[in-house]
Length: 98
Length: 421
Image (cartoon, rainbow over all chains, first blue to last red; front, side, top):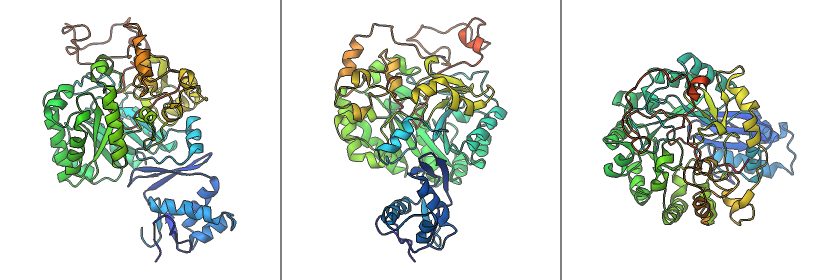
């Protein structure tokens, strides 16, 4: 379930992870991501978003990863949009659907 | 320009600002592995032809790769010269990918046999870029040499037959081939490949032919309109950000990444700000010095200068400046224009005016020349009686041991442009 990837339809309650072909490089502004499969570069524009992405693998849902990274309810919509964009570009993927 | 990865999405102004001030490590870089080449393209950015006897050894190359892995450089754009003529080329490709450094290499196709194509198709971490500068043999071979069109097409057939989807066909846009854009796209589509077009720069041997090969103003407009219509599926290495002055920005970051997020390592280990700027003015250091590449990247005074806020100079008051950023540093430098003025191909025409004021012969000459000896009739005429041998002891290159030269190839990261230092 729930590996929808179009922007805006991100399933916060699903289990996600970084795509196995993606390399993450922390930067002062957040992080750079590079996908060796699509050969695309992307960015995480804040250290908090990097933390969320890092927690995806070990948390049962994206919502839990956000909570663990300290994202408050008022910021959740913005982080959901960021995650949707990452899913759309295949930087992250559903844990059942690598 | 340039920057970074093909297909990069600009994610907002603040990120571009971060990039302008430089990163602790390049996102990717161009690495010319050798100056040796079986061809003698008239516009070669690195004036390639003959191997430099001081080129990095296999062990030295591996040390550089180790550093790139530590710095988390995502991938290298390998070029030359013709990189595949190095005996250790495949060994180095395998070493890089095993160490998490992706490889995209540019080739004229000479070594892309069915067997090699098969092997390349099996790797997720290697991308291939075949150079082609004409959609017909006549246009291509006039620039790249007799038979080079057939060589490139054979390589493409081999890659497609091996199931290598999405390899790149890399075209340098010239006055002779702008009208073939649709034909190039058709060739790419027919192989399931992706078209990549980059800007002709007056670097290397390109300095000698730029006047006659660079697109006319009308062709630039044609190119811009074509990119606006097809840009989503065509890679440009961010080469054409100087055309953003026409209005709508083109896909990509529209900034010069030279020394900030990209750079060039040449065959003898010299590190330059970008592949189009092989000249002492843009030489940051050498990977053979203590501290290696990382120290050059992080401590070079040239790179520190490039990472400081740049002034728009003569362009600052122009309404197009925010879009074009003054164009390409290398293009200005090698046409004798000041770095804080317009690009020679400024879409508002200011470059043309500025060029008219440059005295003949005043433009800096590209450094280093590894051209095959008998082949630069335009330069000095006639074969030189001596061919292979050590450099004369009094040549500037000999005293430094690390001969500078031009970066060649139409490497992906292309187009760096720097607003003035």
